[in-house]
Amino acid sequence: MTITLDTLSEIVSNQGQFLRKIPTWETYNILKKWVLSLSLCTILSGSAVAATESWYVINNYTGSIGNYPVHVSLQTYTFGAQTNVKGSYYYDKYRSPIPLYGKETSVGMVLCEVNSDKEYDEYIVEGKKYDLSACPLKLTHGDDALHGTWQSKKAMLNVVLNKTASLDKTSVSHHAENAIDIPFWGQTTTHSFIGVYEMNGDDISVSQVRAVNKSLGKVDQVIDPQRHNCHFGFYMTAIYQNIERGGNSSQIALNCYSTGGDVSILYGLNKDQHSYTFIH
Image (cartoon, rainbow, N blue to C red; front, side, top):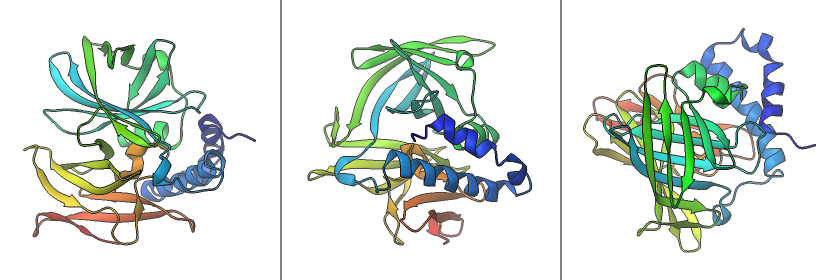
């Protein structure tokens, strides 16, 4: 039996009555465990994703939506009936990653945005079905580029994106330093978190996560995500989901690979030290 993302959504939705009795943060963790245990068993045939052959296929872009400069990162899949693209993008002025999900078409892709914790839980975690025609981003493939429109009820803006880096199976390309920046979905009020996936010999590894000050644009801290026995970077189906929100607006959770069940490492902002420190 092949379990697709849509099937996972149906399985999870059947637990609705049970989940409504549990607090939001605990509900989220339960949903994540169900989806991970099912998707890893079926998609990965029960084995870990080796850094020597990443299953992630990523393309990064810079460009603009209207007059607003943006950074965009998109991951494509070969599975998923309704959703086979996930992504993360941010406006350079604000540096707050916005999750994307959608589908490739014959000429490009159509992408929806996540604009709230509720939408994240529904469309990213649960895989709730959605109306693709209502998605604001409609893009067409070009020569190492994407172009199209972003549309809301009030405006339509032109989109122009140029490829800057790619991660494909066993290599990083289009980048002089053989590295690609991944804007994780997890963020705090003051910082976004960028993972640096780079070639290390014949392998792909991630040894640093940069905490980027949203207001100033500078790197306030570099976190080693492999500490505290966290096998980090190649676990979650969407690469951007390897860091998610924590229990409050000043915490993040790093999702770690484990054969013994779901494991997350929690970091929180220590206001006295002005840095993120390990909680548990």
